[in-house]
Image 1 (cartoon, rainbow, N blue to C red):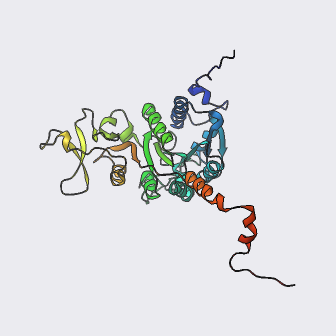
Image 2 (cartoon, rainbow, N blue to C red):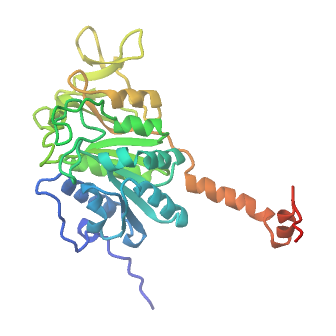
Image 3 (spheres, one colour):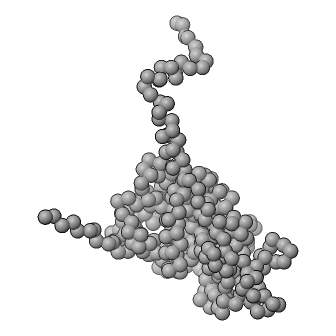
Length: 342
């Protein structure tokens, strides 16, 4: 009698390749790598069915460090490669790793169309508000006034909001997390993976060399409880060390305001409840910035619809009965035709 032994459950280390990880000591990418490996282990992902695709930049070293299939592609084009991979084999689990420069500058057009089409891939955008690989030039997400080798007098440009970009491109799943928030990041990545369609996750990531502590205003332990709000579907929008602060709509308007429970007769019943299917609310949450508001983290928006490859497969299935070999000659001769005489 044969005994079937179930395969051993893989651990996070089983998703690590044999390559030496070569990021700067202290880089936030290390933490994201560990979180991703833990996510795959928790999901029981099969390495032979998992693919990581990257473009150019520090984040784009990622495929080398994963025990899975990997494509280190060209600048900004990772979403396009990922689209082709997913269409060629929809059974593959495809992850795109990009950065604020790679994804939102030269790759903005490719990222936009992947989100618009709703291709079933997980897109992880590492945002450190700087070009790290090419030695510290300002990026599309750099704040106005950022001093860098390319803007020694300070950037005069307004930054791109990665989340707002994803909304504008028609993204159906938009979330945020922080490199050092391991538990939170793993849960966000699991939600992204569960979503059928394009999942966009902005990860605030620290570049210790060229833009150190750029997010310290809301990530430092001393301020995190007051400067962050962790949103969860169906839960009140509450934050603060004592959980006594929250968000509501300013009376008579459609604007958010941060309030304190117990002041001016405000109770928890007055606070907004997070609805991740509400695009308008998601836009408002993404726009919040300190010091007037906390930074929103978690799943800001999730409103599934059929993925691009599912719709394409349905279209092919619907057209197959009409496409028979006996009809080919009639098809070629249908409509306007010409006879060429020599």
